[in-house]
Structure formats: structure tokens, C-alpha cells
Length: 325
Image 1 (cartoon, rainbow, N blue to C red):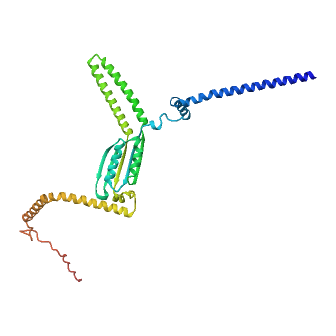
Image 2: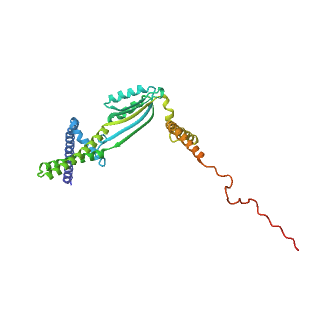
Image 3: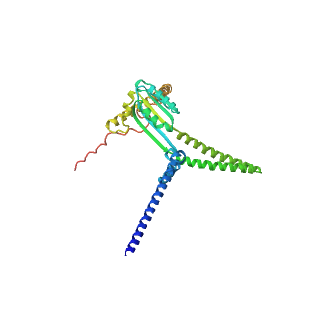
């Protein structure tokens, strides 16, 4: 029994020692793996300009599986805006707006001004790069009291992509027609191919013109700003669609005055002709009537010659009644 007990204890000690060795080996392997993984993790950080971008692009691709192919900054968007600002000095505000749009790399597409003291008005059409659109709008609003602002956007990305595809296809058609034209042998074939080449080149030029127009609208946004004086806000701030008896009365009176003005204008234009032609014509008509009245014979007063006697106008005589015998 003593020998068996001793042998069992030896086997237990051996098992414990083997387990300790295994645990020590696993810990060393973990430490080695940790120490080897650290440089691998630090490597992308050291080479961030070249190695981090693919990871970000891959993450974007995994995160936005259902997102559109183009980002917002890659889309073709047309920005247009209209605004109205009340200022103390209309001319000064207009000069500041022109300087501001010129500083951003844009230009003035239209300029209409009306100087009438405090009710002066200046309407400017400003073409500004799309990236400077919002900052310029905010700057123009600080020139005075903003009364109205309206911003509109139009996404023409699909139209631009479609135009690009159609232009590529049309260029290929033009090239193929030119190759056929170079191999033409007969005069009728030459004339027919020349007409086809001309038609295809015209279609290509039309598509390229549309593409340039879209490129201009997307590259340069349009801001139509109106600067008004201090006295120009009362009438413009009233709602145009107001209803009521007084509004109808004012509208009717305005229409009546306008109609009378038109009528008097027409009368004034016709008056010289009426005096030049109407007076002589009236005088001639009066003279002709008088001559006709003088030439007309007077009717006879009584019967002339052996005519029938006049019919008595009174009632016929009543016969006398005869008396009885």
C-alpha cells in the first residue's frame, strides 16, 4: 500500500509539473504574439498618407452599401438665389456687392439702378463660384435689413452623365462616318456620306453646347439681389393676395382711372382728325339737306279740277220715323 501511494503521488506531481510547463509556454506565446502585433498595428499609422486611405475607403464601402455612387461634393448642382435688402445708401451697397463678387472670382451679369432719393433701387445679377455662393449670400444680408430671401437648387447630375455618354457615342459615330467617307469610291456615295458626316457633327456640336451650358451653370451660381431705399418697403411689404371690400374698391378705382386715361389718350389722338375731316363733312351734309328741302314740292291744299267731292266727315242723316195712320 505504501509503494502504491508513493507511486500515485509521483504521478500527481508529474501531472502538475507538466501543466505548469504548458501554462508557461502559452503565456510566452501570447506575449510573443502581442509584441509582434504591435508593430503591425503601428505600421499604418506611420504610413498614414499611403496606407490609411484604403482602409477608410473600404470602411465607407462597407458602411454605405446602399449609398449613391457620387458624394455630395461630386454632384452637379445648380444654385440660384434671390434676395431683397433694405439699405440706407443704395449706391454704396451696390458698389460693395460688386467688389465682393469680384473678390470671389465672379462677375456682374446684370445691373439695373434707379436713383430717386430714399426710394432708390438697384438690382444686380451676380455670378459667383458655387463654393462661394453661401458665404456671399450671408455677406449681402449684412449690408442692411434683409426683407426676402429665396434659395433654389437643381441637381443635374443625371443629365450631365447622360450628356457625357451621348457625346462619347456621337463622337464614335462621327469617326466611323469619316472613315467610311475616306473609303468612298463613287460620287453618289461620296455625297451621301458627306451629308451624314455633316448631320452627325451638328448633333455632336449641339450636345457639346448643352454640356458647356450645364458646366457654366454648375460652376457659377447666380444671385439676384435687390437693394432698396428706406421708403421703398411700405408698399412692397404688403401682401399681394389680400381680399376685402376696400381692396376691391381700390382695385376698381385704379382700373377706372387707367381706363379713363386710355380713353382720353385715344380721344386726344383722334381730335385733330375729327377737326380736320369731321367739320367739313358735317357742313357739307347740312347744306345738302337744306337743298333737298328747297327742291321738294309743296303738297296741294284742296282738290284741283273735277275730282271726286270730298267725303262728308259727319255721321249719315237718320231718316225720320213715319207716324201711324
